[in-house]
Image 1 (spheres, rainbow, N blue to C red):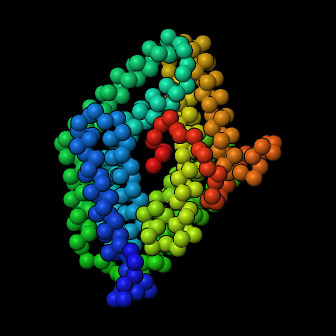
Image 2: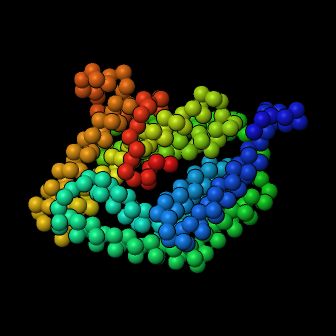
Image 3: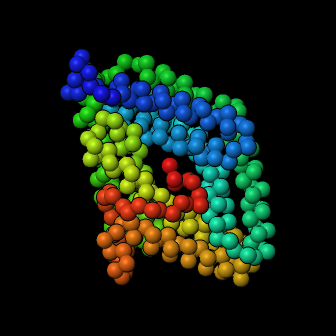
Length: 304
């Protein structure tokens, strides 16, 4: 939003900007619903979840602007739908991750076929919930929230900067987690996701150097997402009682190798100056700009 003579930057308040952005995100979410109901578009669930996630992030940031009680009511209603579709998305990511290994094993192929049956059942359940209007309530609550009086006007630019700085510090607290710590890397990925969405959504009113964190955060989120998907897949294989021990060992070895390569790619971007100069420290890094040329993840769950 470009300042006008009648609305200097120092006098702009957060509510109009946030309201406009929230309405745009709601429109994006509603646009995914026909695709979800059609059941023919495998990316529809993913895109719906991304839209919900962005709404939830911005609503969380907006609590001091619109009021904690009403904002949390909208977030809670959206969270119910997000969780309901989570099992389906996890199944989609598991299939994509394991298929990308190209393991040639008849028992493993049969096991994957059974997982596809489960995925189809989960998809029917989610679509039925959407058909019954599962998103109607949270969208109606959001519309009501945006017409309520604002409790207290808050200056826009300082508000946006504080949000971005808080997200950046969240990354910094976790940046040295070792790559052997699966849960720690997962928390770091979530922190990068928070930094990414915050700087993307508030980017138009942030200083350029602060808004620039969005790109690196997205790339590190993707790299960490690839590692997380492999860790989750390994857990599923370990719990798969119907897989013969030899097959399980074969798949786990492939997952271990894939994780090693994903970790090395992550570390090269985290420490680009050390690329090709021998082993690098197996820790994290800040929100600095990583090196380009990243590999496209086999699963899109963490791509956006």
